Length: 188
Image (cartoon, rainbow, N blue to C red; front, side):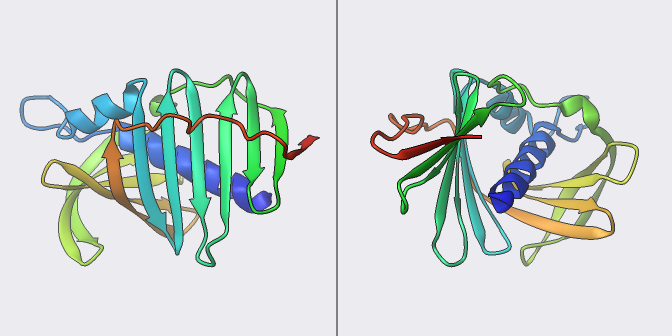
């Protein structure tokens, strides 16, 4: 369960960083479409990090996250109706606990501010990035390839973690926020 919290936090950092865009010469964010998608009410984001595949969906104030680790184990997290639901389909278990915050698509973008733009190697390519920082130890590099979000580099506490973005769109399938029936439930 601790692994789930860690990746949930990583996804929140990823989504927060993706909300922040560099500025072009005319003052308009270079990644305005990405910003509009992630600040809207509906999106689908899929990325990889260290052998883990994360997929997040947001629609109508509900969020769902699917995490698959390198061994193929899948965990789902659904945030709806003021509660988080950690779901293990293989064992037919669901952990339910109060959400720290109400379900929302609003992310704390005010925590990070634009610092500088540059270029760096990311996923085998030299790409432009915009750096954002919280003014302290956290730095996020937002990599853009053409008009698409290619990935993020999160620099924190002397560590660097790259997240490759595979999909960013508004395609949210029906049923992704449905809770399973007949599972053993544990309130935490």
